[in-house]
Length: 484
Ligand SMILES: *Cc1c(COP(=O)(O)O)cnc(C)c1O
Image (cartoon, rainbow, N blue to C red; front, side, top):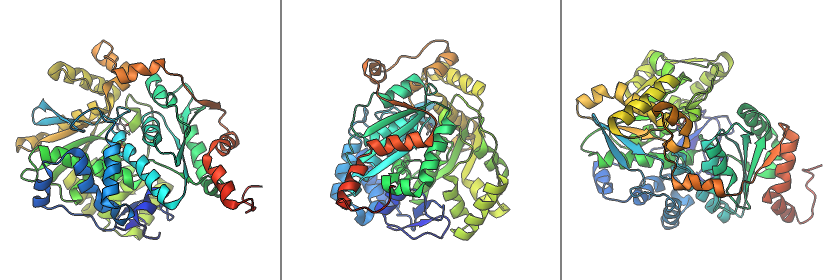
């Protein structure tokens, strides 16, 4: 399997290269050159497999020769062994043709575990065969950091440095990161806000010498392997609801377009998906786009669903590449214009193609609280603010689908106990906190407080990254003149 850049001007890469690379050299995002296809017979065959077996069947074609299937299967089994539910991504009937897919049974109780548990192990495996190490550097306002740390704990060839804004991450999310006691995990609390943390990370990635010395890598949502892993739960849900005999629609709370793009990818692989319904919070760039055909950047303001507070949906470029018939030059021109003017307008034909598959709606904080309360009253099920937006979108826009008997699967992306304040505000009482979260209060927290100063962060990483020791050994004392 080869991967090509959405901007058409970077070398095609193999799976292991794409895994470690992240963004393409031309600024584009990698996509598979050709989708592996699963016909109706192959899908029927898969319906009786376990989740883990489905992961192997569906995603090994993306990995190809980079990892032999038996070794890959071992990694997959190990990745999902820490999930507390069988099946791994269970469905709950909400009535009215809507099914909730619970994607919060991983170690950090959010859907990012479904990808990051595997991605960490893939990194480690690929690095081992190459005799290399990497340093993962990231900034988090919550979910991504804890899921990335948890995914890398068991990966000795990967060091993780995760920046969070000091005092501005919820207590649960902070403890999920800082109570991890592992020699390759480094939490850094920055004395500033999340944007500043992100800027620090960006600056360090742009410092070529530092990036090369540290073998910097990222596990952000543009990483192809995350998308790949996320396609699987679309299959598992649809197969258990009667695919390939019946079509299924999905409603997805999304900001970066990562999760819903994985649904699109599943459809490209042969899954009969009728519609992909997007739910946004008041940072609604995607909803405005699918309503009008024009993507327009606005200011971001904080919401009750912080993991969807984004200004630009980075994974959207992957869809754009297909809408433009995989014409990388056209994508490059459109993205340059978007960066410059803050606007991207689709021509009518492309817009129509997108509109046939995607629809979108948004919900503000007040509506989100009302949706949590309503769903609790009607079904007794508690939703976190992100999941509530997905269910709302399913109920708003799934109508014509359900009328024809097409079930809608709404993705629950986090456990409600990760957002206890919002839940309490919605239903007037605090939710019960599961053992795995409540227990964190008893563990020692480990983090380093640093000022919002790029040199201070760089020095800390240099001092603690194991890759430095390896580089020094590898050079055998010879100076390559990289560090003054
Ligand atoms: C990250 C996250 C999302 C948004 O995911 P996208 O990559 O933007 O699709 C939604 N809900 C929760 C709970 C998240 O952690």
